[in-house]
Amino acid sequence: MKKLKKIVREDNFLSLTGNVVIAILGVAGFALLARSLPLDVFGEWVLFVTGGSFIEMFRFGITNTALIRFLSGADEDSRYKLIGSNALIGLGSTTIIAIILVFFYTFFNNAISNSGYNIFFKWYPLLAFLNLPWNNALVVLQADRKYAQILIIKAIKSGFFFLVILFHFFFIEMTLTQLIIALLIINAITSLVTITLGWDGTKHIIKASAETNKTLLNFGKYTTFTLIGTNLLRSADTVIISLSPMGSAAVALYSIPLKLTELQQIPLRSFVATAFPKMSKASVHGKVKEVRNLFYSYSGALTYLFVLMSLFTFVFAEYLVLILSGEQYLKVDPATGSNVVDIVRVFSIYGLLLPIDRMTGVGLDSINKPNINAIKVFIMVVANVIGDFIAIFVFKSLILVAVASILFTLIGIWMGMYFLNKELTLSYKEIFSSGIDFYKTLFNKATNNRFIVNPKTNK
Image (cartoon, rainbow, N blue to C red; front, top):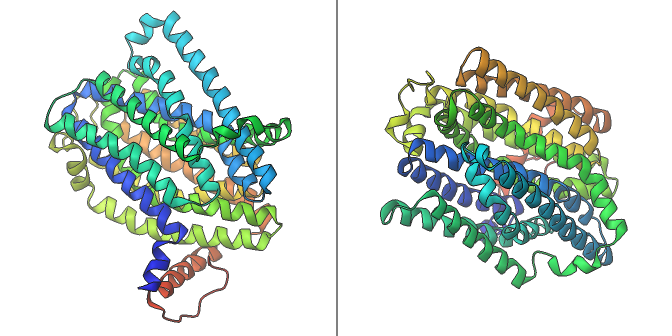
């Protein structure tokens, strides 16, 4: 029982549990909306979420990664200055983005109103301010590795909105505007909770200094681009499809395998959330060997996990589509000639490549090489966009859009390992052996068995 309690309190377990719970709510909500909203309206919802995710990568990319890295080795005085700078810069960037969106919505209203992005331009500026405090709280708590508190924030935000979707599905059908207003209210409540508990760092704005502002911005100018690029790798497909003659219906179709891919990435986000603070702290203190060993351990553990998950997704693709979106999406769409099940299977192959690609990016950021990571992501984005345009406008194929994801990820893995190897001297073989050691260590904690484990694995 003591061993079980120890595992339950372990960082990776708490982070994974939080992401699993939120993902289940997110996927369930997505499935209910896909079943209850007309195809074109559901496409607008997808574009609203996609647009918001892209903008938030810019808003929080400026400081989030930098804050986690520098808080890892900061003294108490520097800590409050860094948290204050994060809140100040976040407020400033949110204000600028909101002004830009309002400007475009005001002066280009006719064009926007006739597009699928009308809801996004109308409501996101308000949402940006309402979700700022709780997003600030998440990054501070991640830097402090307080994953139980992170779970509380996500549970409030996602849990309440899922209840709204249930109410919409089973009792009173709501319009898209009403659903978004409910989302705004829930974000406001979540932010109020984090402000009341003092998790968001807003009260430290007055402690922000020119030095800490500069520290975060200098690092953030690269990580912002990296995060925007990372988001583009996920959202460029949706945006380009939405601009093609295929329209909102194709967006809705493609969003289903994308949502399943997000579900597959739950453990990836969870492990990365714990790996980055650890690797950053080791790097700040000059422990290169520890950084390398953490990279091996996390990359290997995730790769083995993703082999199992990808195999499951490939074999049961049809059932997963049926559960997520209903029987109507199992057939070949006459307008686009696409089969959602086939796209899901292509994405299951893409999933095999994600762990090492993501961990090379984490490694570069943790050793203070965000500029190199930005170059890596930039080349991946260019490859993805070119592949998307060829797939959509030349071959008119959604499945080839998914194939392009495999190609740009292979490019990312090669580049990431090449650059990281210059700093850490890496071996592919060590990734896989350390992954096995990771699970041996985890098993030992649960059973108290004594295997001979490589000491380089995570504690």
